[in-house]
Length: 413
Image 1 (spheres, one colour):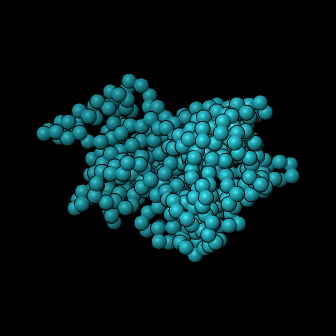
Image 2: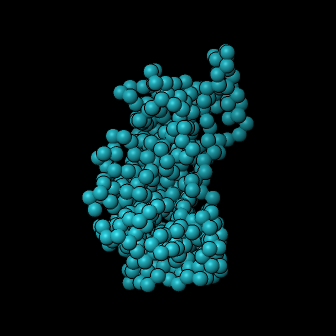
Image 3: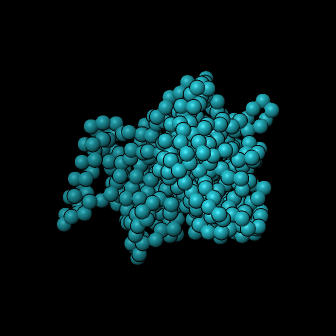
């Protein structure tokens, strides 16, 4: 599931026999569009009363009508969520944001607070695409406890993984989505799910085929960390080729399948990328600052692009409100049907809104590049560019040049 919905401008050259005239026409056309109405920006859909919303990640246990809770699940899921919490803490620290992480909803004794929700139907009634169905039942059940799931970030552990002999079959949804003030992650629970087993090489797990108990936990605890990232509003983000041999896989790329493998000496594991850490550094769950949604009205007043050292270098300036804290880029090859291979880059902006980004791993082909500016409230504003990379000449820089002229045309009006 995508982490959020962006309404974006896409800058791409239109080519005909008269390329120069057509590009000018494209610029004027976009300028007319900009005059006709304001740019739509990403804003959280809900505006909950901040006095009623604790800044914690809440955990729900969803039990279909034909299943029973797994034995001792509360202590086990406490270990799972604490492990994921620590992964984010270490990842933020590695990216220079101290040891900040999200808080978990805990009872007065310090144990993980888990709300049980009994499903209305048997397990087989909840399919892979039934996230909304599960969430609606959770929402209705928790509303009776005066809990509004629309104003929280929640992880729903579902008993929707079925064992058929030694084979595990995924029945229900395993996805996530959200933003800076609310989100949901749908994941599985199982008696074998326990971070204490990450180091195990004993057989007994299954993921696409028989595997060790350690590998089973790599995929499913890694999946929990990954889908929670989507619930925070993070998109997919692949590691660079330079990072892969040294750091492993980015959590929001393929890191959900390498998480914790280093404790078995089977790989480098997973890490939190800079492109994920920057948005989290202003996320209310990480800052513990209650904020209302804020429209990002910033615009690109300066933008230059160049190709050097086999990198696309973007330098620019974003002005407007609220103040821009930093900029994240996701460069996605169009040849791929999904965005799992989108390579990220991030940088903080200075007091004047200036930034400098270096985009790596440019191979011949077409790309969609999304540039997202983040404010201190966690809200963001995105610009998109579509460009090509020639095997000999490098990237076509014209879409970035056109973008600046469009912004200037808008400012003139």
